[in-house]
Image (cartoon, rainbow, N blue to C red):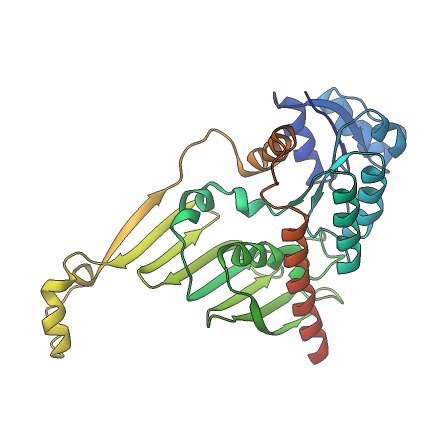
Length: 326
């Protein structure tokens, strides 16, 4: 059984530690956090070891989970990889593209695996519909949340929007052709609200909005393709598949003649509620255990280093486009 450990047990990292500690898929050896008081608090709560320094943790594990601020991702991942340890890195993978490429190269040289924490790939609603999404034409995403100090060390593009960037890129076979974006800093000096338009070589378009200064929390994605569209609500874990009605042929002659008065919506479209399967596990548990399985089975992780780098490249381009206008 793989020996695993975690660095960073803040608000988000404590959830990783809790899941790894109770998982039957690995041997959780303990945690390290530079905030000694926080480390002791979480280790006591979970009844696990708190290591006195980072190197002591690396000495006892096969897999490292990195859940710290982005500025430290590269240094910690590089140190782990050089010691022959597989790494899971919370998104974004690194601060710069060069850092990401350096980690990928190092991992390949040492035959190690990297997974990046784009958790929406493991959301039950995405798992349920991903095989039904084929050649999207238009996508629209809204990911908004009330303001909290957490995560404000980076632009909202890298904190929130990057989730949808990664999802969109995973659905598309075509390459990104053009990106335009606008945004503003309201509560911080960074970018707190942003909108981006991604255009692909095959003509598809994606509009993405992210905000961390909204009055409510909402995470929605709509995907349009030739046979209909999907309306996905991440927060409520629901999906509606809207497609052409099987009875459309009956009213098509009226539509072609411009006679709409006696035509009902149900005559034109079918709305199918897609239920996410109850797998008994939340998205974070599925995500973390999938990485452990990928290592054991010698498979490519679902969101490997290159996928994380592709999302980072687009996110940084969006940030650059916004900053040009600020």
